Amino acid sequence: MLFVPWQCIADWKCNSCGICCRTYSVVVNFQEWLKIIKTYGVEQTASDLNRLFIKRKNDGSCTFLCDFANTNLCGLQYMKPKACKLWPFKVLGTPEYGYAKQAAYAYGEKTFFVYADSTCRGLRYGKPTWDFANYTVKEFSEIALGFRNYQFKTTGSVRLGVGSHFYL
Image (cartoon, rainbow, N blue to C red):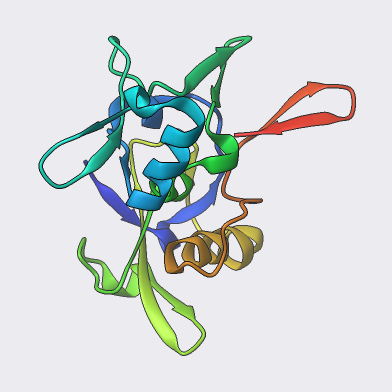
């Protein structure tokens, strides 16, 4: 897996491909786990010695991945775990994947290092657009830092019918 600094990405949009939901196990914190089990039952989760996970289907995909008219939708949209909200981006306190200058992102008086998982099909490489640099990366950073919970730029949007949207 290769992580790319945010300044090498022109834009990102979720295209509902479902690769993230099929490839990665979702680690949840205790509060997220409680919300999931209260709504869907403990059998929708799994654990090892020190982590809690969302259970995976027999095909390896997340148990909450739904196929709706050949579009992948998240069944946990309104209680989506932080790990899912952040993917494909990582917001770190140190430049763990190198390229510190290209990964640096100033937020307030602090500098963070933002990278994207190159397996995401929604990444478009090049010079960052103004919108991506000023809204999308900022929103990912705010979610990572716990300043924001609601997603606008950092989730997919599927038009279901006239005037209606479903956000992934």
